[in-house]
Image 1 (cartoon, rainbow, N blue to C red):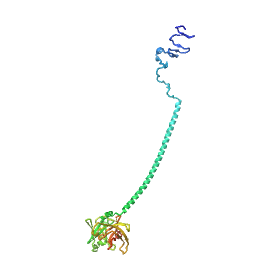
Image 2: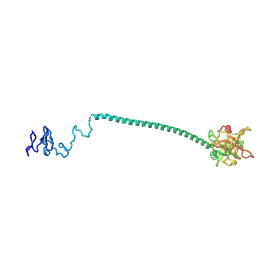
Image 3: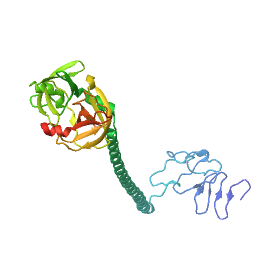
Image 4: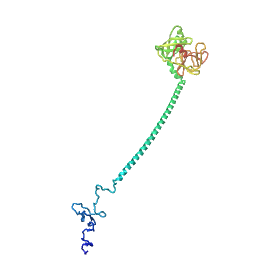
Length: 348
């Protein structure tokens, strides 16, 4: 190589200054070191394309590759990004595994839910059973309470209350005026056929009128006066049946026999004093001794004018008809049992 002349490779052509160096058997290198591939135009200094119509490539920045665009363009068909998953047989093999795993998870979840539902059903059934048992216990308790309430009501009803008895009985009790004599009478039973009211009293109360072939007597109460007729009498039992066209509530005859010590109320018009009430107890039940029938002995005070008045028990039922009191004695009154009058006159 001559000074200032082109370099001459041993055994090769001379290399002109600024000309591309061609490696033996290789492509021609452009200035800056880029190799010119066969069939690819060489890049001229300054970045101009060697062949017209080809894109101009910008100068390479330090640390960047000499050839190629400064920014990567969109990937073309078949181009894979480094971070993109490969779409191949491996991915297709993983899809069934994932699906199977999801199915397994769903099966486990469904099983857990089914188990929870089963447990919930069991709890609900147990709760229903407990509620049914509690309802049954409550029903038994309620029945017991109802029975106790009924028993208390019976006890309360059996409790002796003279005020309640008197208020219930007085509207059915009257003063009887038979000529010059007065006594007491009371309505009994249901209304007779044809209407009106049936009443009972003692025969000796209406005896003066009856013996004179009279049949009319008068019932008096609270300033009112009602005419009544003597229907039937029984002299031996000292009973008389009266009837009036006026309507009054009949008292109820007791069906149970009296007992010694039983508390009673006597209502009448002693000495003509209407709506008089006295109380006492049954002293004894005297059987028929002289053919006139049994009598009830009681200790409630009575006087002339009480004859024919009702003797009432604590249940507001008539047990007897006050008839007389013992002379020269205190607390000995006598009454005809109401059953005797009902049987005699086919009443009650």
